[in-house]
Amino acid sequence: MAVSLSENDSDDDFAESHEINVTPFIDVMLVLLIIFMVAAPLSTVDLPIDLPTSSSTPQKKPDKPTYLSIKPDLTLAIGENPVKRAELVGALDAVPDMTKDKYVFLRADKVVPYGELMGVMELLRAGGYTKVKLVTLEGVPGAPAAPAQPAQP
Image (cartoon, rainbow, N blue to C red):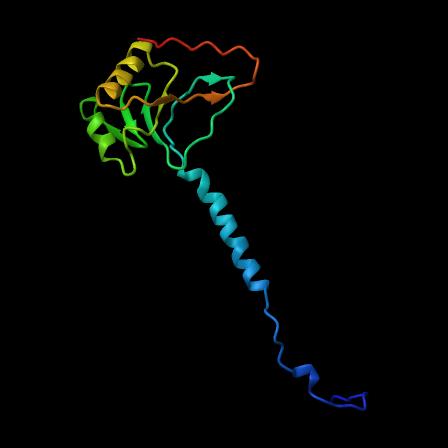
């Protein structure tokens, strides 16, 4: 049994509200933020390569970089897709949005011999890809670079 203590008994409590309820919008935005925070690290190249460190200041990375990786077993990969040395230039030509005036980011494991690295760079130059950037891990500025471990035969 309900009793009303006010003398003006009107239906103002049940009147329509003409305001936008933003609580569901905020909930949706928070869920999208969490999804993007989880998905962003997954969009990078995930090949197990032990990169050397460098103490130089990092350069700004383009929106969609093209990574060419030299694995410790001396196989090549564009992004995460393996490619044969003979098909390297053709595979780079087939990459969407890749032109010969864009940079190719070259990642090489620490144990890759210098001659192999230069051989891949020579293949790129012969194919017309002359803009190559070498990828390293960020080190502490002013600290000496750690020596690379030689490959065991």
